[in-house]
Length: 359
Image (tube, rainbow, N blue to C red; front, side, top):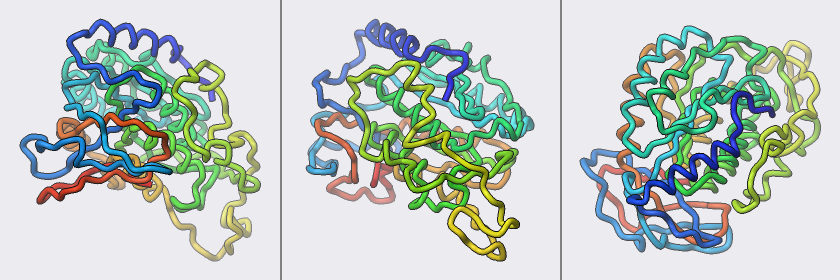
């Protein structure tokens, strides 16, 4: 998977220098197992509730831990990746003014990057994440709206983006994902069966990065439905995230093997050709799992599907909801090894739901 328009490792270094310069900001512990995890309170709250670290329980694969420290949103730098699929129809350009307004309205010490998923590549015109939000907003363009630019699996690319963001300096990290959700590698797979989506979930949830989804069906589908031979996709990545200390280079981002053999595919048979990826009869209608996969990715990473409507006429209210949710977050600092199974609070807050990672 090629990255066009940016050297992400250098972008991470530049961000590190910027964050080092903001000495007034609290910095998380730098121990070898210190990790950050974002949780969000969704409800009728004027302010974040006063809670203590001991009130949270993080259930990992082999242990349960409480956070050692809590950070409010303004206490850490914020890194937001805005991700759009380049097969979304160009009419989405009418929504760009609202998205630009959202970007420039972010508080100080926010870094935003723009990423377009185009085929098996990621086009990153902002060269990583930048603090000059006005310049970032000006970088936005309408999606090209071409079927051949539809990613074979957007979840593969989200997994790679999650891996890169994990290797960046400590910060509150978020992904805002505009997608129609088609996975041509697993065209008929439910959330429990789609290995690509599960790896993307591993690479966001276990790194403490919530995914926020705005669904748009107004997109050109992939030119070819493809299916994966065998059941090996995801095996490489399903064992859990790699060490944050291992660094990232161009090869890691260009590798098409996110979660498995991303290039090892064969043309799939449409339902009119007598079968599909799971051998179903041609007379059986296909089930559209696009929104189900997107919702599962959002919910279980600790984010939310902000809209599942068929068409988007105005994204401004959705962005306002996202802005409000960003203000109702805490960042938990904890020590332990993923995978993360569940995060919960020991007490219930009336009318409030905790958006937290869940296996």
